[in-house]
Length: 283
Ligand SMILES: C[S@@+](CC[C@H](N)C(=O)[O-])C[C@H]1O[C@@H](n2cnc3c(N)ncnc32)[C@H](O)[C@@H]1O
Image (cartoon, rainbow, N blue to C red; front, side):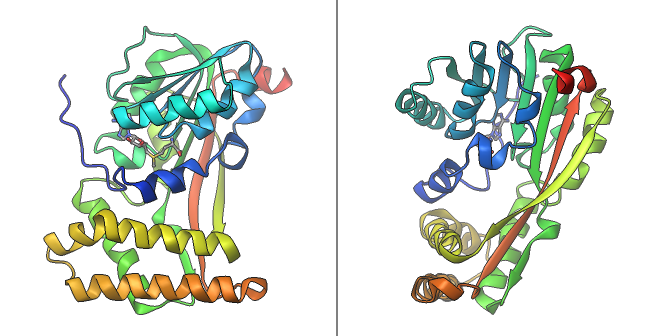
């Protein structure tokens, strides 16, 4: 089956790449690390800039990790990140999760983070993961669920930004509430022995400032145009969103100690699915 590449809502601009690069195996895959063992062969699908993948390299050494990514530019960034960290057992290649270039039952562990929400047919991606995973292998899946986003206090321009972001995901054919559906997808693909958890990634203080700067970057480099070209906002509306976020950055930095001016929490549903979970957990 040939795949027409789908629109990726976040885009590949600098702002999107920097926020993704803040992720590590420790801060984004802690739920999955206990199931990784030395010597495992592991796959990280849709690995982005590869900062999480590199951490998996440490967890499975002397085993190996392959990070796959549909975007060639991110493969190059991920390779650079691995080089900087001397992660010699981690390699990256370009691949579409809908059709992975691996034999059946090639991996002991598969990880998919924040990718399924970018697919029109997430079940096809999960079935591919099932195909390349060995029987008794373990899969860790994590995704956003924007139905759980919280923000307070809410500036109207920032609220509008949030609404348009969700609308854009829907317009691109993707589900903004995909996190809650991961379990159902995995069961449909044939996985069993699911363990669920949900976490909030909280942005307060300097992280809120970084998030605000990231939002300004996204609006400037791509989303401003996306929103106006779809006639959902005027240029003035976009400027108001930018101003609201810029103001937030200043307030948060100036009042760093009591930095509760803006809290943006984003919910994830995380799920670990081990076939043979008990043996793995017992080592
Ligand atoms: C939000 S980023 C997540 C990156 C990383 N997994 C993380 O959690 O930080 C989503 C990534 O999935 C990639 N992606 C989207 N569709 C894909 C597909 N069909 N196959 C492989 N990767 C895909 C995008 O290029 C992007 O780098």
